[in-house]
Every structure is written in structure tokens, then in C-alpha cells.
Length: 586
Figure 1 (tube, rainbow, N blue to C red):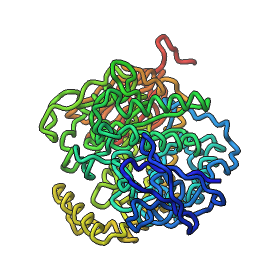
Figure 2: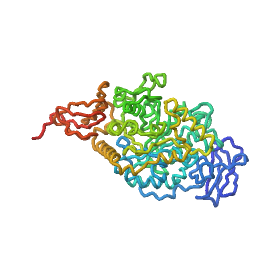
Figure 3: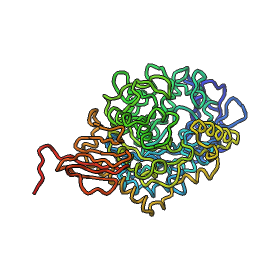
Figure 4: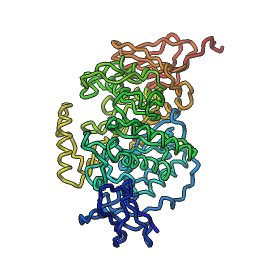
């Protein structure tokens, strides 16, 4: 027997079609739910719902399997059938993490979850602790970034479907790797989402960049919130995902007494207690609002969030070209120093880009509640040609960026291929099956990039298969000397971070930064470790003590001992200061 349920509070009649036969459903109950229990139907059966005799059969908004794409019939999937072999896995604590963001479709030539398993040993040898997958929820077309998810409970079939995700997580856990999953709860994809046929998932009261906002506070919003919370709990419980990255929470419009994020955090904590393993939530937010990651004084209780102020301040210093858009607010070493010491640069001060005061201080919040990075899917993919930091600023400056990310106060996050300065770009691609939608996406991106003074002729068509294929990692890079050198640099930085307690201390005040704007140098002190960067045009000598130890240098340097360490332009060195009273052994 198989039980079918659907939330449709306004429907007059609902029927379920299963394996070609049609059955009337009972309902609605007081909460708008319809139900039918059918014999002879089970895992592998295809089904859909018919509403008020409109002549269409729609997939289930909570479908666990969409083998024929988001507009095809749903298929019954047994969550309990998979045989887990590492059910007792315990992820590393987030403050000790090194996160690696990847896109399944471009991580390997074949672009599947099973193929990605073969690359997990590379991540282990690199020193990664957490693998963060860009969205895998089913979306229209074959390829895309995944942020236009339409069937949010189903795994995108070209990636391998639901069992493939479980195999990936199981294999990651076998290697000691935690798995985080990017989820999108601020909108639905423009094609293939049928939730609106059944209930008020969206509201006309508020608008977002993607259209009508998700209904988090209006009539029936308790059921809409239940939909998204159940989705989150499903990934962490049934798929053994270790945490979620929640896309663009600034697009939520929720004035409820208990904010949706607070509800999600509370339910995640309860699930973690029930399962006996760590679960984390990481938000993407451009609000610079410390309430996202605080649990007291009206905070929402999210474990961590991305830190764009750090990325933008670091990028704008490394890139010598003109800065546009949100990057126009950055460009000085003073701002980079503030980001490293206090997290938010815009903490209530005026933003030229926004033309208003922005943010609030987070200087009192542990910095391991923020992720730091120089690259991610947005910062690379939303450039005109998807170029990476090594192509933009050069290999030497990319090494400086890596040192500040991996030895800085934030939880470090890398983007796929960054560790070897991948030669391939990561562009925006979207296989929209609606030609008109595909055309409007291309035109919209060309208009957007015109404001950045990029030649619109350089903008690849997101709908072209070539754009997608061109963005796939070229693993043969690892046979080339320059890429091997960069990979070795990343490995040494990660090893140093993971073996040095001071570099894992995210307490406020543990990071001090000194700089000279005109000379172009900056050094960061974290406990006994100094990270010294020369981004100026001339060599510079930094004073060192007689017993100081040179740990790493991006270029050959003989010694860090007194009277000083000479650094060429675009060079970074890492020194361990001798403890007070240390003596040189003779």
C-alpha cells in the first residue's frame, strides 16, 4: 500500500493518477490536505495529481524522484531502501573546517555524482573537511547552476538521481569528509514548478529579483514554511547531509514573531539532537546583519554566513583594474584590515554603491561564524567570461589571496579548481527549454555587464552547450608545473592551518592587522603567527627577531632572522614568532 498526500487548500477535487489508473482523493481536511491510500502501488510507480478536472496531470511538489525531468510524472521512491555503511559518521566542527564548494555538472568530465566520488581522494589529500555541493534539486533542462530548482525534494536526474546522492554522501563519509548542500528557499525556478497550482506558495504582497516572494507570513504561510522546513530536514535526515547553505536569505520577507530562519534553526537543532550528530546551517546574506548568526537578543541562530565584505575588500586590493558595482565600495588596505579584524567593513557606515548607510557591527561575534573566500560560484561565474583570480591578478597575487583566506580568522572556503589555479573558467550556464526565456536571460546578462564596461560580445550564451562544457574542470592541468606549484602551496597552507591552534582561534580580537597604504604592505598577526604580504611595487624589508621561524614563503627566501625579511612585490611569507624569552641554541 502507498499513501499519497497533497496540500491543496483551495481545490474542489483532487485525483491521483498512478501507473495509468485514476483514484479520487479524500479531502481537504482543516489544513488543506488531501489523501489517498492505494494497493498495488509502490516504489517505481509513476504518478501525478489532477486538480478540479482541468485536464492536466501535474507532478508532486514534494516528489522525491523526477526521472523524466521536472515536468514529467513523479515516481515513488523508497527512502529506506539504501544501505548506508557509514551511518555513525561525525563531521568535524565547523570552526575547524576547510570548505570546498563544487558544482557536480562541471567538477568532472561526465558531470555526475558517481564520477565526483572518484575525485574525493584529491580533496582528502588537499586537507578539505567539508564538501559543499551547489544545488542538486531538480531543475528545467539538462545543465545549469541549480538555483532555478523546480522540484525541490528530487535530485536532478542528469546528476544520477536520489540514489546517486546517497552514494556520494556515503563515499564522502567513508573518507572523513562532511557534505554540505546548497538549498534555495527564496524562489522557485521559472519552468517546471507546479507548486502554485496547488497552494499559495508565493505572495503578490512582496517582490524579489525573481518575481513574487515566497509566502512566509501571509495566510497559509505555516504550511509553506512546513514545506521548506521538511525539505531541509529531509536532506539532513534521509540523505545524511551534514548541513545546508541557504541561498540569499536577504530575499526572505518575513515579519512573523518567529522568523523562518529561526524556525529552521530550531528544527535543525532538534534533529541534530535526535540523530546524535552535528548539523550546521550557513546563510548567504548581503545584509551585514549580525542577528543572522547570533542566538540571543532576537538573533536567528544560524551557525555561520558567507562574508562578502572580506572577499570584496581582498579582491579589490589584488585587482589593479577599475572596480564596478558593489566592488566600487572597496579598494584600500584599510578596508581589508578592517574586514580581517572586525568582519564587516560596512557596519553602519555610508555605502556609495547602495547610496545609504549599511550594516551593523559584528566585531563582538566569533569570526568562525563567517566563511572567508576569494572565489565562489558567484564571484567567478558572474564575471563576463568567468575568469578566476589567477587569470585576473596573476599567480603571485593568487598565492597572497590563498594565504589570507586559509590563515585568516574566518572558516576558509575554496571554489573548485582554485587550489591548482584551474585554467578553465566557470561561466553562467542555463539550459532553459523555453527559447524565449533563454533569449531574455542572455539579453539581461549583456545589459547587466554593459554597466561594468565589459564588451557584450564576450558574453557567452548561457543556453549553449559549449558554455557549459567550457566550464568543466580540466584535471590534466595537474600535470603542468605552474598548477602543481599552486596545489602544493594550498596543501602547505591548509596543513599549517589545521596544525596550528592560533590559526583556529576565531575569538574576537585574536587577529591584528598592520598596513602601510602608500607602500602597499600588510601583515596579519594571529597568535604567534604572522602573515606578511607585500602588494606594493617595490621590495620591502620587514623586521624580524633573531629566533623567528620562517614557515612558508610564496617565493624563495633564505631566512626570517634579524635584522629583517626582504620580500619582493606580490609575495607573502608566514613567520612564527619566537616566544618571549626564547634563546638561540648554540
